[in-house]
Length: 387
Image (tube, rainbow, N blue to C red):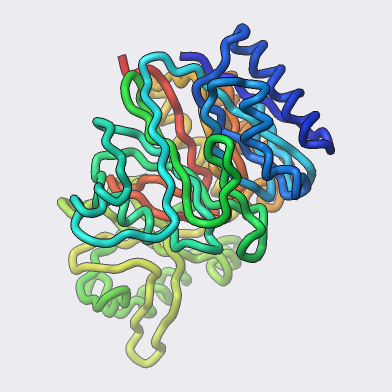
């Protein structure tokens, strides 16, 4: 297995494809890749409708998967809001690739969903891209989880347009409007994931002791707003400022236990409160005896969170051959004040692994054994041989 990543800021798309493809061929010693993940900025509209065709002309025999994006990541660098094309390619001996195209959300039993999605590979891993303006991606990942509960699913939502019809999804030589596309990979391939949600806990983990839907009426037997008032009094000045604008709830997603395990919280917004009853609405369904932890988010916390998760991955002995990064448009230079923050941190912690990807309007990745749509997250897919 060999991976390579290339980036071009050439203003003419045809020249950018030639430039990045030449870098890919050189890195792969002249071998044409099996898979090319391609991410292109909206500056290349309307030429990008030919992107798959142009790539396959330069890298014959490769399967192209990609989308339009506000910012792209290639060759370990991040370009936001400027003309750019990123190609990340892999030669994958012993790996089977099956494409997925979703135009409308299916429904039904898990078997009916499997029939609709049509993925027949054994123990596949799925790279998934969707247009958030034409499809409910959260419902899509829930349906995929129901159909394939053991499948790793990771990816992101196209960010190259602000209204329906402006995004494009690339699959093979097609430039598709709307829905979702993906590639299921099976065989001699392992995919490790890192989902850095950029938050840190404040206070202590608590149990939901009374709830209804997504509304928490009691945490550890107390009204949530009373818990928050007490918590606020324990914080320093900096955290009190963050508390006003960057407060979130982390929800434990593993139902078979009640104890808190760091890194397995699903970060969700606080969406409402009732000052009369002290109840709090959280952007996720709740159940009694579930762990909830309040969280804060800022640039320093996001850096510390990602560094911790990358260190943990390294300690597990994960040695990837290539990687894809699906990062929120709210991270990058907007959050950290400089480009290449997450890419540089990845290189410092993991090493000179070929890294590509894009800035998403929502990130897809697993937390606690289930797949979710995230925000303000950097979700990494790390690829290596399974044996």
